[in-house]
Image 1: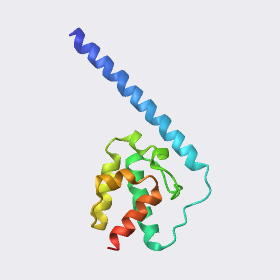
Image 2: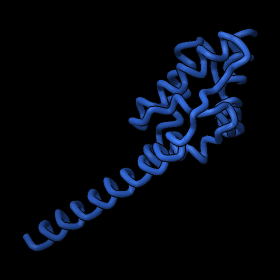
Image 3: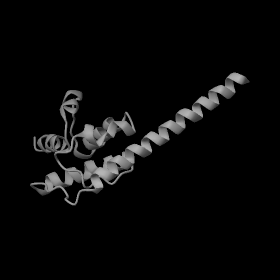
Length: 127
């Protein structure tokens, strides 16, 4: 009985730490993106639509409004994997399904920015 109580107490502590760390992360990202007044300008409607779809999926995963994210924003800086380790996989799968393309693991690892992701999708769709 004592072991079960210790396990439950540890679980509560770990859960609380998780909630607090994610709340801090959300505030930091919201503050960084919220300070921007500019919205990304894409060179054409195809890129704008793809970027909007990707940002919408990112918003679903993170619960944040990422519409002020720019093509040059690095995924590491947005800390998407900090929210959910499967977030990147989920987003890539959604994009593949939406646009009827396949993105290899190697290509996914090479994508550093939102702009990289959009360009990869545009190039695949046009093949």
